[in-house]
Structure formats: C-alpha cells, structure tokens
Amino acid sequence: MNIPSRFNVSVARRSDQNPGSGRAGGRGLRFFGLLALLGALLPAGTGAALAQAYTPAIPSRVRGLPPRLAALPPLPAAVANPVLQAEISCPALQQRVSAVIGAEADVWSVSVADARGRLLADVNGTRPRTPASNQKLISTAFALDRLGPDFRLATRLWRLPDGRFRLTGQGDPDLAIPHLQRFVRMTARSSGASATNPVRLELAEEDAGVWWPQGWKSGDRGTAYGAPVTRLAITSNTIDDAVMNPPARLQRLLDRTVASEAPGAITLNVISAREPLPANAVLVHEEPSTSMNGLLSLANTESHNFTAEVLLRSAAGTWNEDEAARRATAWLQTQGLPLQGVRIYDGSGLDRSDRVTSRFLAALLLRMDQHPYARFYLGSMAIAGQRGTMRHLYSGTSLDGMLYAKTGTLTGVRAISGVLQTADGPRFVSAISNGATTPNRTIGRVMEQVQNVSLCATTTASTARFTP
Image (cartoon, rainbow, N blue to C red; front, side, top):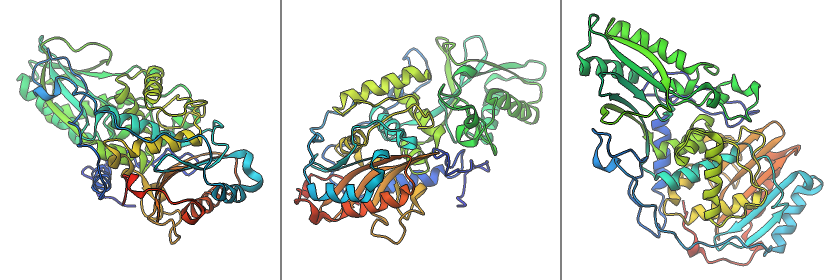
C-alpha cells in the first residue's frame, strides 16, 4: 500500500509470523491520524464532554513553555459502566460457539459480551493465553485514559544556562531527517555559533540496556518489527531492518547536517536521558508528533510495535519497562476488570511471557466503550475487509465493515478481539488461540454465529455507545 508521506523515509515490512510488525517511520502517520479522526467522528452518544487535552507534567521552573504545558489537568470523571457478568446468559450461542471450536477447545479462549455486560458465551474465558499484539489493546487504552486524545509526543531543543544546547525526545515514531535539519539551524541561529566559536549540542538518550524489553527474543531484535525503542528514533529506528545503535546513527546524521548547514559551528555528544534538565533551561524549538489519534491508529490499525511501546512508557511516565508494566497493571486494577492470570511485560505483545484472558479483553473493550474517549479508542481499530491488519480478512462476508478489532499473530498464536456490530447493538468479542490449525477460519465462523442475534434475548440497544 503506497501511502503518501510528508517525508521520504523507509517503511518497516510487515511479517504475518510476527505481527506487531506494521508500517513504521514517518510514512502514513497523517493518513492514519485521519482514519482515526474519522472513526472518532462516528455518530454516537458521547455521554460526557471530552476532557481537556492531556500533556506530560513539566516542571514549572522550566521557562519557555506555554502555561497549559506546565501541569496535567485532572483525569475525566469516572463513568458508571456495566460490569461483565460471570455467568453465561445465552446457552444457544454458547452451544454454537462450542460447536465451531469443536475438538480444538483446549487451545481456544473465546468470550462474547453485550453492551449491558451480559456474558453471552464463554469458552475457557479465564484461561491465560499468549495474546501477541492483542496486548496493544491494553497499552492504547492506558495511554488514551492517562494522556487524552490531543496528546502529542514532543522532540525539543533546549538552551541551557551555560550556553550548551540539548535535544530531548519522547519517542516520536515519525521523527525524520528534516526535523534534524531544523534543530541544527535553530541551534546555530540561537547561539550565534561559528567555526571559531562552536557550541555544544547534547543528544539525550536512554542507555542501551532499556532499548528493548527484556523478554524480546534476540531473533526479533534485529528486525524492523523488533527495532529498539529510544527517545530520538529516526524513522522508528528502522531502515530495512532494525538500526542496532540508534544514538550512533543519529550522531552520524547530525554530523552530516552540521557539515552542510553550519560547518564547524556545532559539536555533538550523546548524554544519558536520565540527566536532569537544568533549572532555567529555555525551550528553543519543538517538533510535535502526530496527535494521539494517529498514534492510536498506528498501534491498533497497523500493529506498530514501536508506537505501542512508546505509548506504554508515555502513559506510565517512565522508560523503565518493569515499572511501566507495573503502573499499567495498577491502572487496570482501578477499572474493575477481571485480572486473574493477566501478566504485562511489554506494551506490544512481542514478549511471549505476556498473558491475558479472553474474558479480560472482552471486559476491557466493554469498559472502553463507556469511556469518555470511547470513540477515539474504538475508531482506531482495524476493520474487517477494509483497513489495517484486517483489510484482507473476511472481505465480502457478513463481517466486512462490521468488525472493528485488533489482530495478534505470533508463531502458533492468533488472536482477534474487538467490537462486532449486530442488529441488536455491539458485541464485545475476544478470540485467542494458542495452537489452532485454521484460526482465521474458526474466528470468522465464531463471529458469524455472534451476528445471529436471534440466538440470544434482545438487549437494550440504547446502552451501546459505539455505533458506526
């Protein structure tokens, strides 16, 4: 799919054996942001006004920032939401789903809920499974709740009190060479630097020990879908495969830019991103990422691992993966979700130690349907037969255009969880297989049974918030 880009950058190749891979770098982020925005504008009752935009807390002592960036506004008010029931309430659908799964029941977990929280069908719904990229449903929900739909990642150039300059970042997946050129120009202009009076530009980056989640396999780390997660990541740290030393590449690119834009005027060195920004640092220039709409769409529609990992860190307020996972788990606990057996180790699902249950994912989708930002979340999903990782799935069937979902694929793992539109309102469905023979076909047959609303008693459609 050739998507126009605002920059000419490389695009990561997607591998069906390692989902979580997706389109990387700057290409298409504006396009994905538009798709997410269209999803967010679908006609549905919001139930609550959108809260103010969220931005990361920045010390007020740092000068040069607009007042609205100095502190976080309060979180949106809690919304009364249905709780997923524990007892199966639609025996007919339960029987049909069990029949579709048949002899492979031991490797499947399937849960189906309606907008009132009724558990319509459930097969092994409390058994923990490897979710693959369905893990991104957690990261994106966490990020949207904590940061809001107008959040943008920022790459900033600062002038320090002693005359040095520092470049800081938050992991913008769309950062590209034209940004670097602007940062170099701004450094030269703001300092009056020259070959006889050079200025030092510091590149603040995380240490190599935290570039990859610990559970990512070595074979994944060299691929585009397993690229290192860093703060100053040019084209999401990918060319054709992963860039294994992002700070070295960044410094080489900046050296070339300095040589052409300001020869001899700027010297470069890499420092730890953990080094505090000095008091009275002044913001010289900022390059914002695409909005949260685009970031969510890149993570959920195209299953981009790098973006999902950055969203987890941003929502948690830390680049320590263990601490970020702990804070995400703590957030889930506040949502009243069934967490028994759920284990979070990364934000993308590439860590094979991640565990979720289908009942948990159905409950999470139900909860997010009642969230003040529900349409941003659900509008960021892939769509069966039409968009993202589901563009080629179920095309021309009754599911085409009706299933908004997140896919997940690793060797031996296939998962699809999302919202299925029916004549009786939405159904929140999670289907996870760890070892099935024809998982896509089985999931399609399950979804078609869920569409048969005559199997279950009529629900109150007015409880549904997401209606395309």
